[in-house]
Image (cartoon, rainbow, N blue to C red):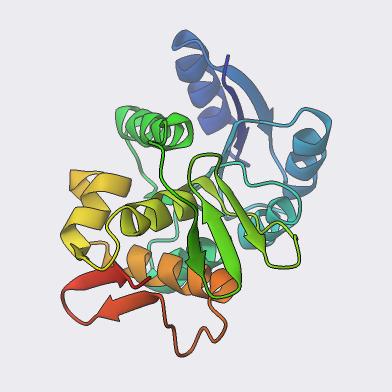
Length: 226
């Protein structure tokens, strides 16, 4: 059973999500503060986190960074902050998706299903691929530097990278990437792609400012250059 940690300081939201998620056979833990969330995640590691940014003790972005220090579990932000700067900060810290309050429970459930599908999607056999000083094995979802050190990617980072690496040398349009990774309702969220490609370049390219393998085609999309 998928374990979801819901973090929000509004008791009515915690209660509503706990009821709706349990009704759909999810195992649910709840926390009302950032400190309680980090403690709960460490004690009972979740499979997915739904996180409010406006917590009373620790800003939600700092909670994301705290989680990303040791886990790649998917994180869906649930927040009343609708500004693009807040979305960028959350995505850049390592969040996988962003839902703005007020929200529909069915929409959130759809986002949860989408993230868990990406997490569990099987990979077809492909040869190991190279990006700078890294070897990427899509079959077992691993990236290793030439010195043997493993590089950890979040599920959404993996999904974006995999879409590009499975079409070496070919342009993958912004629309196609957004639809395949996040869903058809995200086709205008090009800021998601900018943030995730920046994250992947920082982790994989020798010079992230001058990428040689994860290439942007302005106004069109992205391509993996072997």
